[in-house]
Length: 143
Image (cartoon, rainbow, N blue to C red; front, side):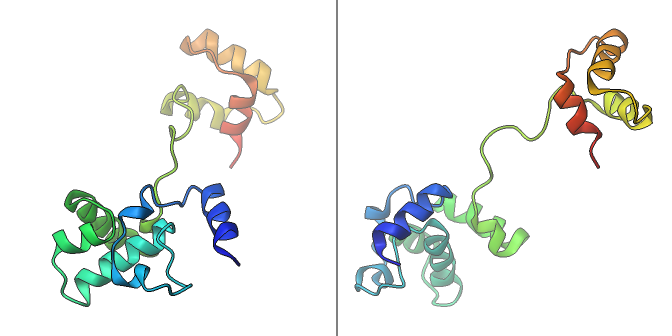
């Protein structure tokens, strides 16, 4: 896979390093095809590796990989907590519907499965004063 194709694949998956030009680590500067400064996950991994295995200071490791010292600590904590998955950025946006409170979710869990999402949405609005789209209700009912 060429660098252009690799860059497109990373961009599609939102894994592009925001400032690959700031990556000055020798690994990424020696023209080795495996090391790609635009690959955010690889750069984060090598930043941690430089510090943990090679003894490079946090400040120097972060700087050589285009990150701040604070960002280094966030990456290190995420890696310690989640392993390799911690090197991936969190998905942008909110997590789940905001209006489906525990009370509403409990109501949906107890509701008759044969009742339509539209009817349940109307009942939720009447009981709880919360307006939900029928599809939100249907998704909330899925296991």
